Image 1 (cartoon, one colour):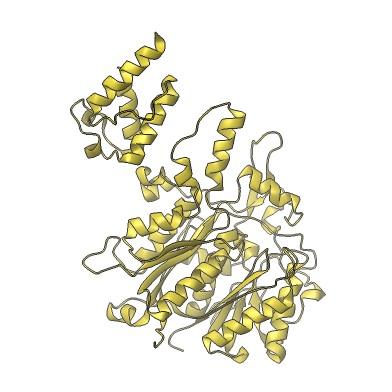
Image 2 (cartoon, chains in turn blue, yellow):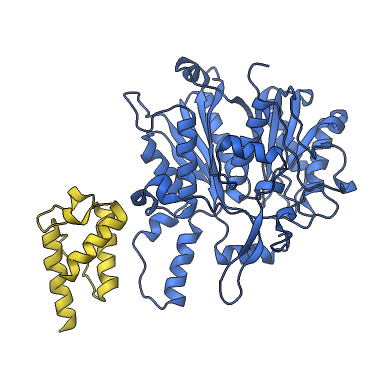
Amino acid sequence: MSQRRVAITGLGLVSPYGGDLADFFTRLCAGESAVGYLLTDDVPRPLSMPFVSCPAFDPDAVLGKPLASMMDRFAQFAMAAAFSAWDDAGLPRKDEGENRDDWGVAWGTALGGTMAYEKGYRELWQKGRERLSPLTVLLGMNSSANAHISIQLGLGGVSMSHTVACASSAIAIGEAFRRVRSGEATVMLTGGSDVPQAYGVARAWEALRVMAPGDADTSATACRPFSADRHGLVLGEGGAALVLEDWDHAVARGARIHGEIVGYGTTCDHTHLVRPEAEGQIRAIELTLADAGLGAADIDYVNAHGTATAEGDPVEVAALTAVFGERAASLPVSATKSMHGHLLGGSAAIEAIVTVLALRDGSIPPTAHLGTLDPACAGVDHVTTARHGQPLRAALSNSFAFGGSNAVLAFRAIDL
Amino acid sequence: MESIGLIRDFLKDRLGVEPENVVPGAVLAELGVDSLMMLELMFEFEDRFGIKLSRDIKTPRTVGEMVSLMDGLIAQSKS
């Protein structure tokens, strides 16, 4: 069967800055951090950490109270991002005569409705209650996000969720891409969302000793990928969505095309749960380039996984230098987690959007707060302030997860 | 009478139904109460009034039927 080209016709997110997509990208290019300081009133010890919140997000206003009350916060982010991407694609929310039986959803989430279950535990163990709302199951299940999206947009094809830690939405997007490319689906709504501030979840992450410290004054610059003085990652909440569409279908309806998704590769290190291996990442990048029919010389930007952990950053750079060889030294790389944080299952989706916008607008957002480069992370062209007016042809977005799962997406600019 | 108040508050909060439309003759399904919302509404009653609804309870069709059912159970629980 001949392969279809896959257009990206819709982009949507819940921005931690509170504005729209254009505002989000402008602030990223300005190097503006969305990282704030989270201080809760939890007992016995409050959460106190750098964190990316979306305080301006009002689910009742965006979704309507009846719908919002049927969802855990991660699904509210998913639905809001999906509506935004769908509107951006110029598609009507209810099908107007066009059959959507092969249109689907592939959503990424690492944690799913953890908040709903945590609320349940609090009710039972802290408040001494004996029963829980019957909605708890429906709020808590990981597939609630994709299910709500399918219902709201009238999509009759596959509706699934992918849980692969920090690569969840990269794999969701990749699997969605394959379905459109093969002709199985005309349109796929894809992306990811997560809400990592459940008390038990955030405490567990702290225990791993991979979280950057920070207080009210220092949180904004707490996440410093590739920097000699990096101290770890910063978690964040949020959601981001993309509409992937059969190219001919998009052209026929006169849709605006932001960019093209052209490749996807995924591998497993199969060595260790948390210690990444360059070899597995190299295979994922090479698979993606081959899948896209691109060579190393065609790539003009890499949005790195770049979480700012001691172990992860140098391994990623080692993988890039191995794949790109002589080209590596002039290969622009940035880690935008320095500003939007690590959304776990939502990370790859927000970074896919950043990569598509970089290609579309010819602007590379920086790795923020990268003062002194760690010599162990040298070997690529680290972008530390935004570069505009760049004739970018193709770009990669890396996602390398706990568990050793690696997923890489390749995108191409149009009109170049 | 407490029952109708709870139903009105619940439907206003969850479905945006105006309280004046929540009258004894109104059919719950037509107000937007599906099977899931019915479970949640029954849970609210159990929670608020400390009553226990048996599993084989007949699902009320109208607001009036629900009020009679709940008022009866609440009265029983107090006696």
